[in-house]
Image 1 (cartoon, rainbow over the protein chains, first blue to last red):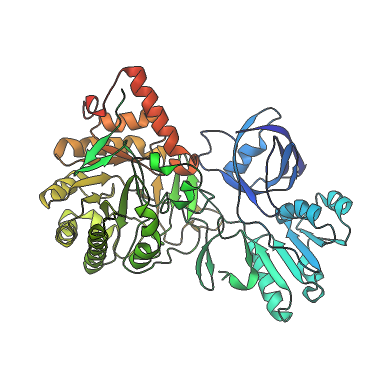
Image 2: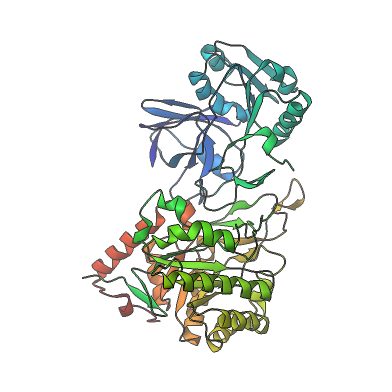
Length: 231
Length: 310
């Protein structure tokens, strides 16, 4: 259990939820969250947006029942929280690009604290959010696209490491773009599969990979783009 | 002195809390979170003779007080299990149950024979990795086999009979609530010399994505579990306990110590806990503590005092 410190809607249908306490986590890891103890039944996997000594922040898109309940939490309310889970991002080497689409921007804020030299690409279908916060942290370039394709603005050949997070069609496009660009950079995708246990036991978050099935929670959520078989 | 111990087919359980197949992996992940040796037992992820990739597409959806899953028996196969998981299972101090699935009778029998041979080999060396087999004729998420054998009693009889002949390990048969006659199925298991039955597996169920106008699940239907099914599961466990003398492992939506007590009062020898492992990662130790506290508060010293009192 944890106590809600703040919960604000930063853009229509997008929340920044802060919880109080001393937490741990590496960039790209996630926590399992649910608003109540008994309802909803299952927790939802949510990336670490930011982590400070006495608080943990999440960026959450309201998509269904579980996230709607999270949106109704008020400061002082309790929520159920377990984590951190997943392996997080690989070691960041050389020239780095973070590419986020929509709510997929969430893990890159904390990552940018660890690697402020990275270039950041933020894509939104409608209203952008958190852009100023990213700019305030970044030492590299912050590129924003609204309503188009953020991927078109990224030249993979300029980077040694590219990490992308966003909707599945975008991640599929990342994979194709890597193939087209000759595949020099190490390109990773961070997946947002549905989960139940979060620790690798239930197999509902299974990811089809070139060498068989892997678990988004325990083997990921970050995979080499070339290893994932997109539907 | 509160005594939570139970017996099934000569196998001793420290307490009646057994983790249900498919919700606990092979115990490794939960073992990193708490000491699983305090549990009564665990039933491992359902195994088939050959490795299985499982179902495509979405595999989980939450429903009112429950969840739907469509994993489709993804598993590494029996050979990999015996090679890679059993050395660790040998070190565990709880009842270790292999859940055995199959696509054909031949696959079930070959699987049972392999597990039995492996157990005999380890026994000669003074080691044990597997205490029981739970025969899964009730998975709703596999098109060929699985539940196909769990619907009609006379088709299931053939599987139970042949697997029974293939192993000397204690044999539990896991029943489906989708069976035409779950009580008749349990009676058949008794006639065919099984050592017990476990029930219930998930209900075949459905969810439609109305924006896409198609089923959420590639396999069309999925298996419903969680608190939503508990009252029906309890009724079925009670009916089966009335009809057979075989020990029953009761399960379906158990999420509190009070739920455990209900299943034991309905006649279950032990219970299995599934979905609740996702809700609370330390569900096992919470249930054991809660059950102990309940027994102490009620002055119940052994579970025999309340088992099957209805």
